[in-house]
Length: 258
Image (tube, rainbow, N blue to C red):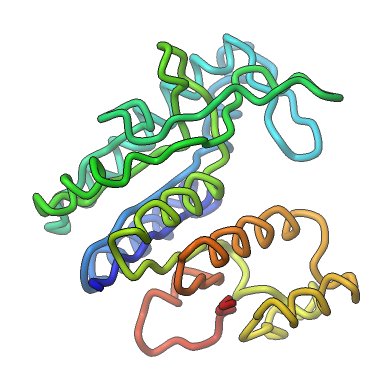
């Protein structure tokens, strides 16, 4: 099976012009077929506040009312996505920017209201991996923002980590798929205050142990739940660390396998 790399980058890289340019160069130089997934929450929050729209968060997740959805669509699907696509074109990577509504690629359903009504937030239900593959086969590099749709005309704000793992699960029907989650840290850390205390390899057994010891907690919990869901559903390896893990020389990051 041919290799496919799916790379997700977070808001802090997007906000820093130099970091973003460095990352996009590394991404462009990655061998083989690839997909990029990005968020843009910090930019959306900043632009919303300029427009006098207050951003509401519950447990670190954004509540998306109708006004906020408009801002997110403009910022994720427009400003952030098209900027990246233009920069990738300058690096000779023939990128195409997408939401989940484009080519009906990622369908979600609105998150049911339990304790919290998150508004127009979607949970991924279906990835049209054959359609996405048509773009890849035509030598395009898909760049997905964190927006999906419900198939009935409604756009939905969707967690970019989840989009990454669900697209990877779908594409693993056709490819030997690896995920790269790029963020500020060097990887999963044994000690949050020591940036060099990277846990280099986590399998199911080590994961349980890290959970029991409370080393994996807070924001890392949903990230790693996503990871193990993907690994159990056909994704070969998941790598977590800073953008340097996209270079062949760097081995200081966390690799997750079954």
